[in-house]
Image (cartoon, helix red, strand yellow):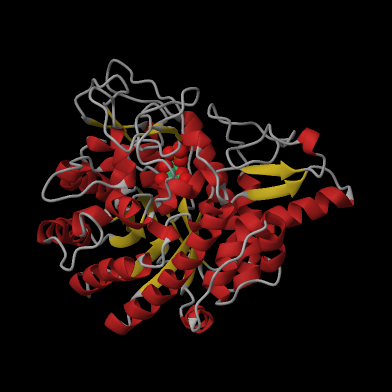
Length: 478
Ligand code: BGP
């Protein structure tokens, strides 16, 4: 058997993409709450001032805030061993800088955690998943400012203390490395230049100096959070979370190989090298030099980074792309740059499907860090058809997941220490990049549509029964 006996099979969500109830029980406004709906062709917008009549998908999402008991019961029916979710920072500290946490927010997540435990489901909690308090963007341009470290640690202290003994696994920042690309600036770090006018999400004004400085603050915060967690409960295990963007040289021409190596250093390893090894990598000064930036550090930061390395490594994996030294050949690839791989097919949203790339990625990461790994996001965003009898035949999704699980099993046979697998959007939710419902990932269909119609009913897709079998056989029957 490839997977270990205590393998953490499960699924993943994020608060702003599923909860709704965006202003209830004392919750403050997060950066996600001011993002409008959108689609692949019509990008979502960031509106610092909410517009009357505009659709904001996070405001209702799939109403998981009110229906989490029903949803967790369905996860339990599939046999989940683990549920990865995030805590909305603004439910605990509405503006981000309060002295005391909001009791109603703390109580809500306590109920969610208790509900998981009732079924023997291990919570895996992302502390910050693309929803910085907007109050902190207004106050200090969020992670551009060093003040954020203190606010983040207050948040960590409140939840680490409250959930002691009930939670074991924490992740400090979702896809922290998305901030090495301009697209991550607002959602990941709350960086926003224009606080008056709307900004198109895909056209954020880029400031690499600010992005890389923000990353340094997040590294220090992550390291201090690891230390704090271990002090509060020595049983706590804290991981990083990165977006692994598998990348290959477009050709074997040495120039392409070097270009690809540099892409990997900047996109895939810059953050995890710091979070897992506790030291900036040797290539970091080259990246700063090429961008013409300086990263300000305070005395003592290096020591903090060294002492706060993560216990395990987690990542999302959806696709891969290629790099070419010839700029004319670049640009037609996936979301995060690069160019398309001629050997691979893409999803309807243009993400190139590459199961073998997952085996490759697992081997690369384990060989580099020798820390336990977990795939905490993976899946196919697709359009589903709801049949008249309420069934949903999503064979394409089963095929995608089956092929990826097969490659995970091969990676385990290669020698990789793999803790678990939580496919993304185990229940349909709002897409992060495009802000729409139409791009569905779930084993559970949610009857809610982009035109604002739908009754939020939950329906089991064919993949629901398939995944139930996969878990029951610990990945033997695919
Ligand atoms: C990751 C994010 C998730 C998520 C997923 C799928 O980048 O961590 O929040 O949504 O990607 O992306 P999308 O929703 O854009 O299809």
